[in-house]
Length: 253
Image 1 (tube, rainbow, N blue to C red):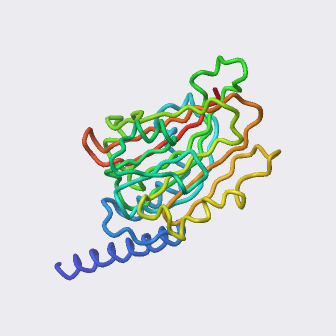
Image 2 (cartoon, one colour; image 1 turned 90 degrees about the vertical axis):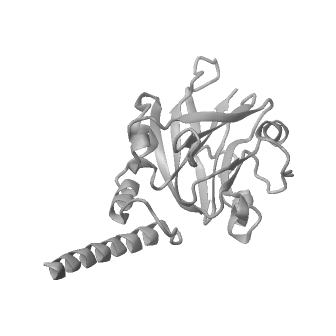
């Protein structure tokens, strides 16, 4: 009886190793180490077509595109609406000061591991404006385990606004990026700041995205406008828990 149990246990471990290899290979990310769920379930939650608006706010959702996967090795994220790595970051600055000065912010207590990035097209909350077409771009990133957690499934974990920034002048494109702060100036993220290599030509208004080992960014060229409102939302694993999801939205003024 014990021998049969050991064989079953070894078989389960081997199957999970296969799913792990498949998942890491397809997502092209390094091994994150310990995970809280089986790799077969993690893989299924990534490839079954699920995205965050399927679970809630379906009435706001229009369309989406899977960008890919990246990794957080550190517990600090840098969010930006600028296509430049030259933003001055002072440790003593709080979120409000950074948002006001640069339109960027640092987030701490990020859940490390694999993150999945999607580009969402959603209904604008103020689409009664004369020049607004009623749509809004959103960079939506989540920890790979998010959809399997009970707190997310039952709605007890929700998004909260952590900051916003207005650009009150004509903007060429709606840009948003998420970086593992540890790798902000590393070679692995340099391609994201080389924006001319991946954003569309001036007359191309289709959304573009780029992903690196420790970062993701999106950009959509804009037609005539009077500026953009950028909002940063996060979801925590409970009131004082780690950040498990990040959203950056851009809305025309």
